[in-house]
Picture 1 (tube, rainbow, N blue to C red):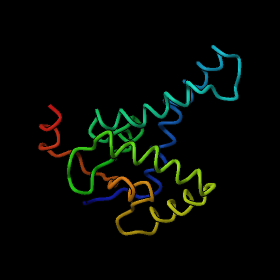
Picture 2: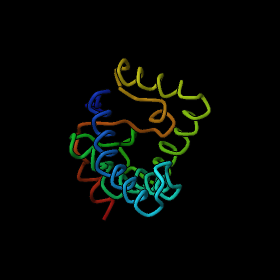
Picture 3: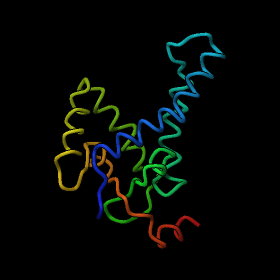
Picture 4: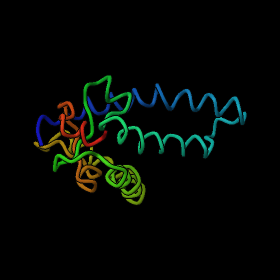
Length: 142
C-alpha cells in the first residue's frame, strides 16, 4: 500500500463523477418522468456505475481517472465485485444507519490517517492511491 490519495483529491473525483454521470442521469430521468425527486432507476444506475466501472477499469471511475487516483486492494490483488460491493453497498449502509455520522468520521479519517483510509475502505480492504495499476493487475484482467 503506497502513495495514498487524500481528502481533497478524493472529494474532487466524487464531485466530477456526480457532474459527469449523476447530473446527466438526473436530467434524463426528469425528461422521462417529469419529476426531480429522483427516479429509483437513476439510483440503481449510479450504484451499478460505482460497482462495475472500477472493476472493469482497474479501480478508476471517470472522476478518479481525471484526478489521477484509483481504488486499489490493500493486498495488491485486482479490485473485484466483492470488494466494490463491500465498499459501496455495505459502506453505504453503515453511513445510512449512523445517520451520516459515519460519513463525517470517514472524512476525518481520510484527512488525518497516514494511510488515508475511510470506513468503507477498511470494510472492503481497499485504499485510494495515485499509483497506476501494476502490470500484474493488468495481466490478471486479460
